[in-house]
Each structure stands twice: as structure tokens, then as C-alpha cells.
Image (cartoon, rainbow over all chains, first blue to last red; front, side, top):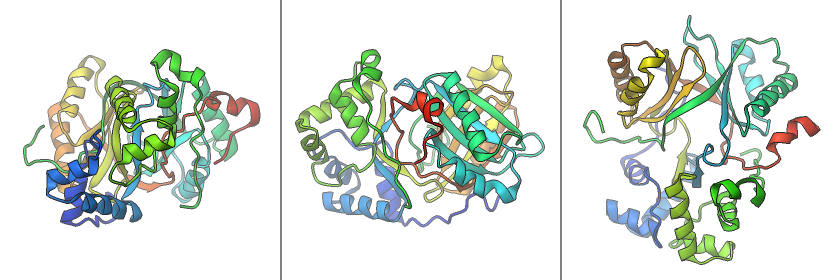
Amino acid sequence: MRGLMMQDRTLNNRELTLLTAIQEGFPLTSRPFQQIGQKVGWSEDEVISGLSDLQNRGIIKRMGVIVRHRELGFKANAMVVWDVPEDQVSRLGKKISQLDFVTLCYHRRRSLPRWPYNLYCMIHGRERDQVLKSIDSLEGYCGMKDIPKQVLFSLRRFKQQGAHYFQPSSKRS
Amino acid sequence: MGYHKQITPLTEDVLSASLSLTVADLALLNAYQKNFPLVSRPYAEIAAGLQLTEEQVIQRLTHLRKVGVVSRIGAVLQTGKAGMSTLAAMEVPVRDLEKVAQIVNSYPEVNHNYEREHALNLWFVVTAADEERLMFVLSEIAEHAGTEVHILPMLDNFHIDLGFPLTQEQDERVDDAGPDFK
């Protein structure tokens, strides 16, 4: 399935080793990078410069505390999807992502005929009504009130963890 | 990066009551969703900025992770730059949903898995080292669940993720002053 992703993978083995070593997070100890280094046979400095390099190249987009929004009281989480003509996706996506309450905004491939939607955004809020008002406001600002859409609030969360890119060869964990 | 989305300060009254978060916790959560110090003793550097000790920072983060407010301290990668990833969705009869969700969860390549309010009710993200493994996992899930899996790969990302904005005014902004723009 060619063209699944836009970017080529640009990581070498050393970078893969480092990303694998940090995929469960940084240890909560005084010298976490030293500890990560011990797992892979690197010095602390090599871990720090490796992470710095991955960040500078844009492969790591941020480092720090990763919070769970539900536990912080943001229980209303809506994925909003629109069926937008392809030549308007980029303009509308950029406009949507200017809005402060939008936490993600993606152009995705459709799955026809069942799923014609190609522009996605995520809106988190404390209450459902507030999220619905935000969506209304977004559509007014972006001129999208007449574009077919769906609003999918999240119900149960079955899993939320960081991406595990690199697995041992076993089929299941 | 053309612009920066600021993480607005979160104040005590909003969350601390229900979550037993301290003022220091809120400061930690607000200040360090990005810019984790790449130094030998990062928690000591964070502590210095917050008038805490290194031990206190480690202890509070350990607590926040234990209660689930914090998922981990770590790196968020740019989608598509490391490995292959896609969103996927399935329509599952409600009575089978738990069972199918467990099948989906059993793959370590699945990092998010949510029930959503729609006929297409199970939504998950699969990330693998390469496309072959990604497609293998998706086809196995379809086979085990006995249901079509809609594969919805990202074509373009319009948003720069700089952390989850913790704002108390978020609820009222739209009503009061129209949308806020970054």
C-alpha cells in the first residue's frame, strides 16, 4: 500500500535504538539519561546529544510531561470530521488549526463508500455543550456550516499509551 | 515553527479540588509539557525553576503518573517521521465491543483505542516500524474481529502539537469574545 504516509523514514539504527529505549518514558530518577544509556550501552552525553539531534530534526516534536486530558477533567472529547472537496482541504485545515480549542487537525484519506470524510479535528472540553458550541463557532469562523460532517464523541477509552514503534519479533505482547 | 501556541496558566480552583493536585503540580504540568531540560539532572533543573527540590519534583511526577494524570515523561514524535502509523475504524455490534476492543488492545502496535458515538464505534491508532508490519496488524485485527477495518491514513497535519492547553477560560471564550486565535 504505497503512499500510506507522506514522509520517508529517515532514521538510522542508532536513532531507532534510542527511540526504542525511551518509548516507555524517561525514568523518574536523578539521572534519567544515564539510566537510559545503561540500557543501550551509551554514555549519558551520547543519549542527551542523540535526543537533542532528534528534536532539532523535527523527529521528536516535544519532550516533557505527557498528560491525560480525561484525568484533568476534560471529559468531553469530540472528533469532528468533514467531507471537504480536496482542493479546499489545505486552506480549511490551516484555518481550523488557528483556533485555540482545536488540539489536532489532520487531512486523512477517505474510506469510500462507507466513510467519505477527509478533514478531521479534535476538540476537548469539560462539558459536551461547550464542545458543541466550539464546533458551531468553528464552522461560523471557517464558513463550513454547509459542509457535511459528523461529530463523534468519545465514550470508553480502551487504551492510551505512547507509540511503540519497535517490537520484539513476537506477534503479540 | 511559524508560531507558538502558549500553554495558558491553569489556576488552583479549577482542578485541585477534585484531583488533589497541588499548586506545584499545576506549575509542573503547565511549564513542562515541552522544553524538558536535556541536561544530566533534568529534574533538578525543573526544581530550580519552581522553587522545589529535585526529590520533590521526582516525587510529585511519580505521584501524578500513579494517579493517571500523567501518562509518562517522554518524547512525542512527529507522526510519519518514525515508523508508519494510521487511524483505523470498525463497526462492531455493541454486545461484542469489549471483546473486540481487547483483541485490538492485545497488539502493542495499538497505542490509542477509543469507543466513539457512531455506527463506526471503535477507533484506534496503529503504529509500527514499517508498512509491512502495519498492514499485517491491521489485517490480523480484521480477521480476528470478523469485521472490515477502515484504514484512514493521515495525508497532511495542520497542527503543531505543543502540549495540551490547560486553560480555565476555555469554556467561556467562545461565548464571550468569539474564538481565540493562536
